[in-house]
Length: 154
Image 1 (cartoon, rainbow, N blue to C red):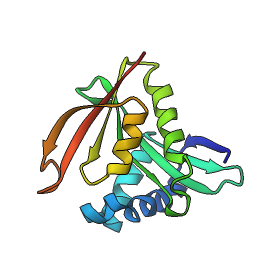
Image 2 (image 1 turned 60 degrees about the vertical axis):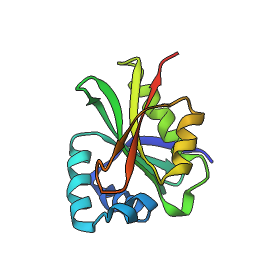
Image 3 (image 1 turned 180 degrees about the vertical axis):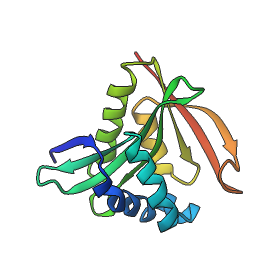
C-alpha cells in the first residue's frame, strides 16, 4: 500500500484519538475521549504529530514525535497507533521509518517505550533494531511495566 506521511492538522484530532482509544494500549490504560482530544490538540499545535494517509487521503494512523524527549536531547516516540481497519499492513513500520529518518538527522540515538503486554509491537521494534535498555515497572499504571528501547544509528 502506498502511503504518504505529513504533519497532522486539527481536523485529524478525532482520527488520532480513535486510533489510540481503539487499541489494546488505549483499553489497558483507560484512555478517555475528552483527555485524548486535549492532548492531541496540544500535540498537533506543537507540530509533533504526523499522520499516514493513503493516496485517497484516508487516515491510516499517526506517530507523535518529541525530537528532544529523552533527557532533553534524544528523539522519542511519544505515541503511535494505526487505525484498527489497517493494522498488520506495514503502516506502523512506515511511521517508524519516518521517525528514524527525522530523528537520525539530529541524533545518533532514538528512544521509545513499549508496554509489557504489547508483545507484537515489541517484536517489531526489536526486528527494526531497537534494543531493550531498561524495564520500568508501574510507570503509568500498577502492574504494567514499560520497556525503554533505544536504536543507535549505524
